[in-house]
Length: 211
Image (cartoon, rainbow, N blue to C red; front, top):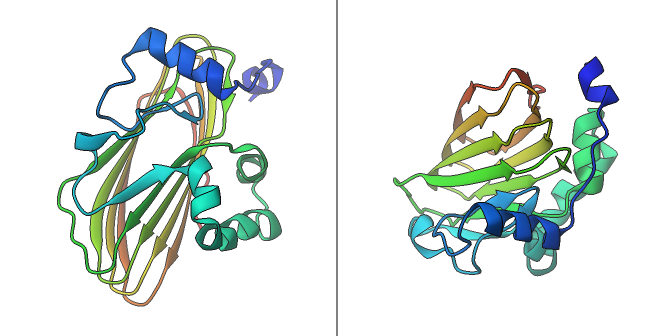
């Protein structure tokens, strides 16, 4: 951990993240993309969202879906002991919120790239997934980083209603100097089921156990 503790990481503003994303790609892409911790996609990603899903940015949801997010946000502060999750709870500005409505079965996967584009950026993206009663979905997170020593400290929170089914995939790719701290918390109701798969290609990877 000495390389991590000795690095001088810095946060990046949304404006800076969008400018950097534009220099790497075209923001008109149909994909939902989180760049350096900020929603960098077009306002209407369109084709990248499978029919039946409701998807918005974490920043926007804190206003529009405040009552639904508040229990999770409160838990992040009051019950958490993991230092990286506490950092995410305190510093997360943006990310993605996904809602799978009651009884909806979505067979096409939703893929969400989380990109850390520059060094020494430190980002804290948040992914929140609500799978309501009897609903089913597949969600894939792809975390990638540029050269240098960028750091991403992501937190994924999954809330499953009774009888809900979620297949959750997390792929991490990065250079030898990149850091990724990833946590997943799952709250299951009734006979809900979740299947998780994780793959990594980065040398430095930490994934605290979910609770």
